[in-house]
Amino acid sequence: AAGAGVKAPGVLATPKVRNLAKLQGVDLNAVAGSGAMGRVLEADVLGAAAGSVAAPAAAAAAPTAAAAKGAAAAVPVRPVIRPGEDKVIEITDAVGKGMVKSMNEALKMPTMALGEEIDMTDILRLQKSLKASSEKNYGVKVTVTSFMVKAMSLALNEHPKINSKFGPGDANPPYYTVVGSHNISIAIDTDYGLVVPNIKDCANLSVIEIQNEIMRLAKDAKANKLKVNDIMGGTITLSNIGVIGTKDPRPIPFGGQSVIGASGRTMTLPRYNAKGELEPRQIMMIRWVADHRHLDGAGLARFSNSFKKYMEEPGEWLLALR
Image 1 (cartoon, helix red, strand yellow):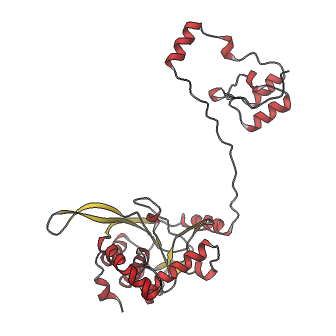
Image 2: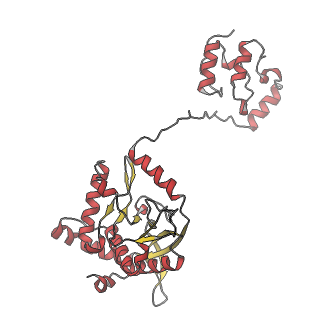
Image 3: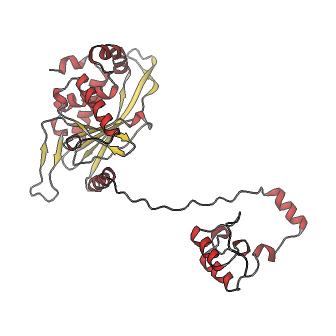
């Protein structure tokens, strides 16, 4: 038999087959693979060990020197791409197991989705103008996310049914609960996975207070120090995934919540002004996904319109804030 099997260039074989060749004392270079693209299989190795495999097929039907030279000139030599080794990854951490459970439950919910375009130009201008003042007077720089969270809460004041949770699937008769507090969950990307803590009672918080809570939750999330109370009790979710990337995301409601919104990245795009003139505007897409068992498209669209109003016309806040 040939010497010990050694990992040779140009031989397609899995680690399992290579180990078998080594145990059987078979040189993989001398084995003609019967698998796809000449991959050497276990049966090929066992056959070679028993002495039943002849020399590689290429040697049995070698082309003429001229034909080989012509073929070499016509077809460039391509490197053999070896597949990586498969790995089974067990999800054992609490965050990951919680996500699996939540998404499995979400699959039981019939959903609908509505998308909307938000002109962020004026709110971005306002946020930028307030950065220095908020840092000087309150010790924190306000972000667009804090304005979005507050705008969601203002829209919920006009459409309270959106802030609801459907009852158990086996309840007779079916029912849903409209939650009084606006506990708005925010998606945070961490080294430990995606976590979604919530900001309690946003209706009674200022933009500065919401910003402080966002900063606290983000800091604790990245340090893996979130408390149970930070995670539990969310009533609606905002995922500002656009800060990482993507234009038009489609999120999935979770945790028994009825609605989730996900915003894409802000882009400079041409839009017509009131005079019919084109001008550059800061445009962001947001998509709302809702539980279709008790929420309908009309109700979700009205909520979306209210959110759009508060984001595009910051002056409306002066009328709506208590």
